[in-house]
Image (cartoon, rainbow, N blue to C red):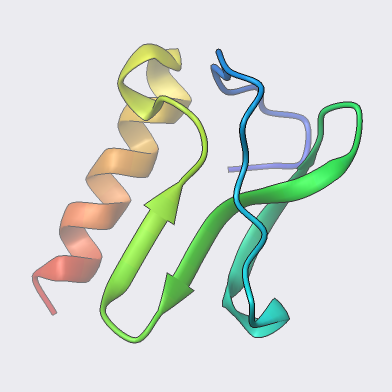
Length: 69
């Protein structure tokens, strides 16, 4: 995944993590916001990986790989 890859966002709501260290990736979408968060064994994404073409499938595949550890 690179900074130039695009992912499918379709809403105007977003979360603001209480802990900045939980932010794994950000996106500029009018404002800078958390696109991926992680704390301990909990992960969340603010976009639709299943609708984000090959890169979205890569996100899901990478997530499965992390879960298998």
